[in-house]
Structures are given as structure tokens and as C-alpha cells.
Length: 256
Ligand code: ADP
Ligand code: TMP
Ligand code: ASP
Image (cartoon, helix red, strand yellow):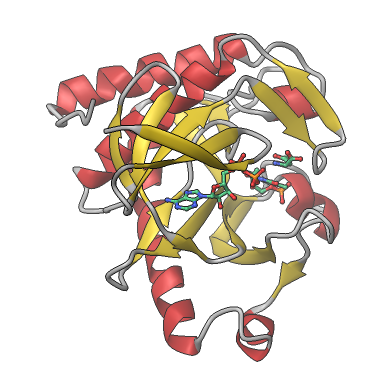
């Protein structure tokens, strides 16, 4: 496989064409951003950790019947994926109140939710990724009713599988963001990345629901960076080590 021209440089990844029209070459960068790129830092080792974490997660998901765009990891910081026509959506799933949801409704972070909440935001840096409801998505022609049903089905299935995966490594999956797109043959698939940049992951090792004895959240995710609480690297290394051990214990086939 040959790496050709760069098609897109985002906040966390560069996407390149390859000599296969349906395959993209993805490079994970060390850049960390928050608040729509307002806060920005280079963090040595982040690109490699996220590339490896998302790869093992896509392998663990495949073993649970969930297909994605992931083809295989080709180096520390690079992987091949199927080229998709992306829906311009941030698909957010919440199992526990935290972040913007907790703020919006004035509830304490960590409040359990009686059911998972699926939320959509329109992916637009200019507009700050605004929230949109299901009717809005169809009314604006961003997706059809049928697409929305399939996108939502996949999001709930990913939540079930990820909840199972993280519960097995003593991590509370508080919420996460995914993206989906369409392949050239018309199937809707999970794409982009699943990493501690895009999930809230709280450490359950101490058995306090992800909080320490003083009630402070034990973050293993990008909130460490967003909130200026310390280095993300040891936390991302911990997530990678636990996921790798799980994949090994389950005998999951690794695409690398
Ligand atoms: P952002 O665009 O939010 O700054 P990234 O730096 O992660 O994010 O850039 C990756 C871009 O590639 C995103 O816009 C994402 O929607 C897009 N993308 C992810 N997976 C695929 C895929 N399989 N095919 C085409 N585009 C993809
Ligand atoms: P929020 O509580 O800030 O809305 O975030 C919900 C989840 O989505 C959380 O796991 C972090 C993730 N997320 C992204 O992946 N990208 C983003 O741009 C934002 C705002 C959140
Ligand atoms: N991804 C967004 C940004 O880079 C925000 C976030 O992850 O908090 O600005």
C-alpha cells in the first residue's frame, strides 16, 4: 500500500489517500486540543497511544460483532481505514451525567442515568458543534429517517459492547463520542476513533464508582487535559495496558 497526498489535517489526525481508492492512511498526531481548538498542546506519545488504543478497541468490538472502518494498524502512529462518506455528526452516548450534560441540567457529575442518552451535535468548528435533535437532523436534510434509525442502532450497540469491554477492565464508561459514515457500497459503519480523547473513563480500581475518598473523579481520559489536572500520558498508558490484557485474555484477533 502506498501513502499518497494528504486529504485532510484535523485537530488530532492527518488523513492521506492511498493507491487503493477505498482505503485511507491515518496518522495520529501528538496534538491535544480542547474547547474547539482554543486550548492546544503537543504531548509526546499521545499519537501513538491513541492509534494503539483505538486499534485494540476496534478489534475488541469486531470480536463482539461490531464492524468498523478499521482495516489494520501499520505503525505506532498509523493505521489503514476504509474510506467513508462521513455524516457531519458527533454522536454522543451518555451513561452517567458528566461534562456539558451535567452543566446544562445542573446535576452532579457522576449521577447515574436511568437509561442511556443518545445526543447529536452537528460537526462544525465554526458553529461550535451545536446540539440538534432528531427532527432537526431530518428537517435540515442532514440524514434521512432511515439513516437516523441505523445510525442510532449502531450507537446503542457500540454502547453495549463498550460498556462490557470497559467493565471488564475496571473502568466506568461515563460517556463517549463516535462518528459514523457510509462505505462506497452503501453500508453505514462506525468510523473515526474511540480513545480517551473521545470517551470519559473513570477508574473503578478503588471501588468508589470512579471517585476517590474525597469525592474527586479518577479520570483516565482527556478531561485531565481539558481541566488542567495533570498529564494524560500515564492515564492513556493504563487504558492501553488494560485493553491489551483483555484482548489477550479473550484471544481476540489483532489487525496489525
Ligand atoms: P477534526 O476534524 O474534528 O479536527 P480529526 O483530527 O480526528 O478531527 O480528523 C479526522 C477527520 O477524518 C474527521 O473529520 C473525521 O470525520 C474524518 N474521518 C474519520 N474516519 C474517516 C473515514 N473512515 N473516512 C473518511 N473520513 C473519516
Ligand atoms: P461533553 O460532555 O463535553 O458534551 O462531551 C461528551 C463526550 O464527548 C465526552 O466523552 C467527550 C466527547 N467529546 C468529543 O469527543 N469531542 C468533542 O468535541 C466534545 C465536546 C466531546
Ligand atoms: N475535540 C474538541 C477540540 O479539540 C473538544 C474536546 O475534545 O473537548 O477542541
